[in-house]
Length: 476
Ligand SMILES: Nc1ncnc2c1ncn2[C@@H]1O[C@H](COP(=O)(O)OP(=O)(O)O)[C@@H](O)[C@H]1O
Ligand SMILES: [Mg+2]
Image (cartoon, rainbow, N blue to C red; front, top):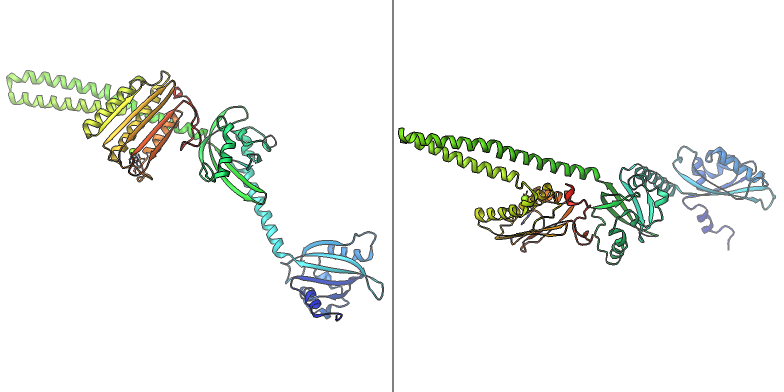
């Protein structure tokens, strides 16, 4: 084999490879093309020159010389990584290894320096480090709790917002099961949900986001919005939960609905007791005038009677308006009010309505009863307006303190709501405000069933569209 075969030359001049040999004074004995080009001249011009000063930082250059002259002080080999110091190549990052040797012929100490261009890797590491720092800053300062768990439900990370919201420190939470943050029955059932998902891949919550109930360290529960994402990494599957405490939003929603309901009730009462009474008085007066005018002028008497009829019609309309605004005076009027609603729908629109309603539980407040009534009213309106139903069935069952109100129609049904109406959303709010949940089942051609359940056993997370947070019916 020749002493310096072509492949050996090719190898020493491979792209990205830096190679140099220097003596104890730093003078160059050999450089390859990459070092020569970094130094800005041909390899021959660098021989016997202390030219590595041009591409190495002064610290690294002196460590290199120390390696040769001070073998007792400097461990062999040395490693360092640095940007090229020369102007043209300063963007390049090179990882160097320098080792100590002796010249074969003279026995003089020398250093062999080799380096690899690691600019791409260094840039990537730098970008990774920066994005990691950014993500850490976001996670640390987020208003929402960010919690990561492994596929066995063990908490792996717990950010400061999670500490604030749940009351556990990160040290207390990490390593525990995530079920720690859930009340029953989710607490006991969480591992089933995870196993079920891992087995079937059928997501109930991942990638969807929903309202659920959270459990704080002090045992109190609160409504929260939970969004879950999944990551597959080399060390397995992980889930990230982002939790927003929506107690305040819920309180506001309830407050708005209550205010609206109270205001409607007030207007209804004013109409009934104020305007209604005045109209009744006016009708009585005009009737008396008509009586008196009968002897004097038939024409005038007829006009007074017409006025009385108009006033009576106005009284009926005022009562109807007042009823619409204030459908119930007491919670125990709920069954009769529903019957009345069914009767009106049947007589005005000619649609068959079958209404069966138990009395509500004694503990049920007027406001809660009104919300239930409004849900039934909106579902019946939708059945008529959107579904063109021929038959509507309303069934309100009371079981102890629980109520299950079902409105079923045989109309067109729907896959996705067509309009941008608020009705379905407000029904849902109303159900939640009274501590219940709404379940709407509908598909084209099969009609629509709306079920509002309040109280009773908590619904399994699997079976309902919306998990609830419990507040008893009577609280409203
Ligand atoms: N019983 C029903 N039958 C058929 N479609 C319905 C029914 N209930 C709701 N929808 C659909 O859902 C949409 C939204 O309903 P809703 O929120 O109550 O809006 P709106 O205020 O217009 O009544 C309707 O436009 C309709 O497409
Ligand atoms: Mg509607």
